Length: 434
Image 1: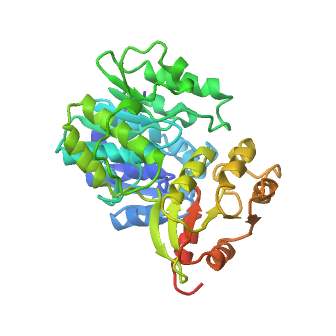
Image 2: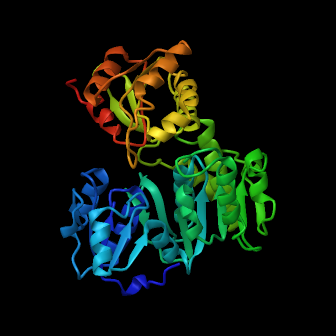
Image 3: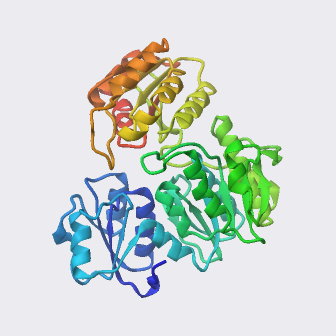
């Protein structure tokens, strides 16, 4: 860990400030009175909100965005050394931290509750935060989405508790030393970095073994993928699947939401929060941005929901949850995220998406990758059709919205899914004129 005293920093620049985690740290530093600037490759809801708070936001990344009076650079782990701002900061000798390193610095002196896992991290983190806030425990919270109840992805607390979403990509969560570790589940993902499931398990194992003997690991002990992870841990294990959740009545459908709520209840029990208070907090939980997030209705009366699902298991869970909300058709507009993930899970994506009645695919969101011609949204559509599903690939958001609106009636539900910028389709759909 780099030894940088964040309390002595007055001017900070963020490379990749539009990232939901990076932006949370930017919010924190603005609330502390630091001068904050940052850049990303275009504007978004995230960057617009930061600008409203007083941050200087650049919508392109150039060396001239970096000045010698900057005390610290914090950057997304997706930023390559060839980035012009990164290179300029190195040239000027400005100290730099990755986002995970910055998160680790923040958590050093806190009682840290780290929420890890392949799926459900954001919702579970938000649910735990809701319980702690309702219990007046005044936590500091960093979550990978905007909390609907607080309209922020960062909550500044003054107590010892630090609740943070802990991402496994590039082993970034190993910057944390949790007192309570949540592992929601463990599946293959991020195979552009990890070699295989065993490699992923090795990262989780290293994190789990950091939890002290007087700490807790909250997980589903029946998950076979967790056996090697838990083999040599010192901490007490709490099985969230065995948690009683009487009187739980969430505002959101889906078995995965119930599992997330039970996980949050397990964490609450570990710190002695009254179970009835915790249940009430969960029943009042309003959700997070882009997690089965209701957007409105189309001109024909179809309900539109927006969701971040970008892994086959998440897609499947979200479509099954939607089935609980409607007796009509489910129309999915899906944007695959990353060429590598789409290629690695082509069959699994097709099987999950085929659970919907109509599937419209937009082009793959490249993010940190370059196209190599090996995979496309049309290939996903072809695979879905081979499973007798109704799927087509289109070239742009406007066409996707028009097709979805044309086939969706008043009893139907449209799901807009993906981790990229596909949320724009939701905005088009709920406008009166299409």
